[in-house]
Length: 339
Ligand SMILES: NC(=O)c1ccc[n+]([C@@H]2O[C@H](COP(=O)([O-])OP(=O)(O)OC[C@H]3O[C@@H](n4cnc5c(N)ncnc54)[C@H](O)[C@@H]3O)[C@@H](O)[C@H]2O)c1
Image (tube, rainbow, N blue to C red):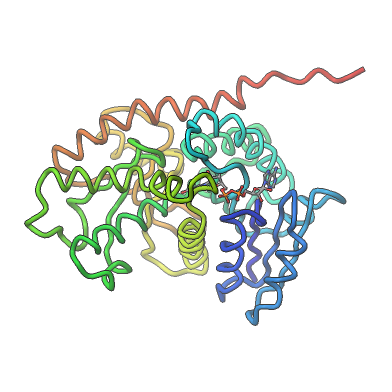
């Protein structure tokens, strides 16, 4: 029996993500929560002829608690998407509080659930969830994931396009490491399962790296103010959730890049830290999954000089993003009770 939860389930990502989770045979219960429209989304999705029983809740009448009771996996796409001209800082100001409040709900009601954070900026929202859990005394770094799968999905698709055979895109594996915004996204194309054609020179390689790093901008621009990536993100989120669930069910050898706390695997983290030459609290690397979540954080392995340069550029930005997330909780002013 697996109960999956989507927080932010009525949104652009939330709805198709809920649809894909409903279609996942491993899910037996699906609980949807949002501040608007969840009863409608739940009623609609509940008519799909797959096993999962669907419920939808709003904040009233302890809706968040009801949603989270008995949850095994919680996926969070709640928040505001980026609009043209909006910076990551602008986004952080809005989404940080939303993610904090939802994390408090999870800590209180489903502290053992696997938590998959989609809400941006992921480099900072994952540390927010971790700090909330630490404060509540329920933190298990092995169970908390920043979903970076969209970068991985984009890398596979763009490489398949360049190889000239889109039918390969499902099989192309490119580790994407670092973080989940702009320059912190580092595709290790030298480790691609399908090598790039010899015709790809340095200029086209740089363009490909840039396209993977800023693929989100391509969508924001194309949607002309109507939102950011939603459908591809829902696909990516459902893919990653499915990997976590398969690993929980005992399937071995599942490895996927994800943005995790390096506390999740101190041995793997030590090797990774040596490669990075800097201590970071969070990093996205290939992560081996098991029944308890993170089993092993894999090292980067052999990378090119150009990739090393990309890693160097990612580190200070990541460091800054992590501190922003951590201090949002640790340095939060304690609210004075109103008399
Ligand atoms: N990780 C990634 O790769 C990735 C990719 C694209 C978008 N995103 C992020 O995902 C988030 C959602 O994007 P979207 O396009 O679906 O946005 P959206 O505006 O379409 O949907 C967001 C939903 O969250 C809901 N919401 C807001 N506050 C809430 C709260 N306190 N509790 C529950 N629900 C709440 C809204 O009502 C809305 O239905 C954004 O932060 C976006 O930046 C992440």
